Length: 78
Image (tube, rainbow, N blue to C red):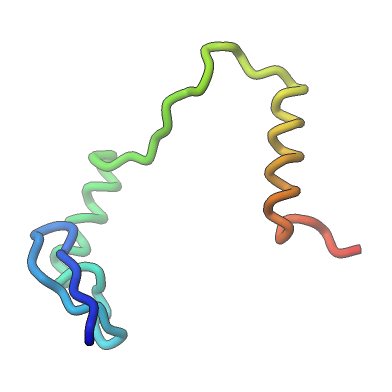
């Protein structure tokens, strides 16, 4: 059974398979329309600030340390 998804641009049903080079889009046209929307900043990935408090160096260092601990691929081999 093949997975079917909707094209993010036109909502047409698309079969998700390796032969479909434009997946999840139905066509190159829809893929380029979406790319243009990103380039024009019509789409944005944003997250609201958690706090109005300014970030101190200590806070940034702690966040960086936490990130590195959870993402071991950034750690230099010993």
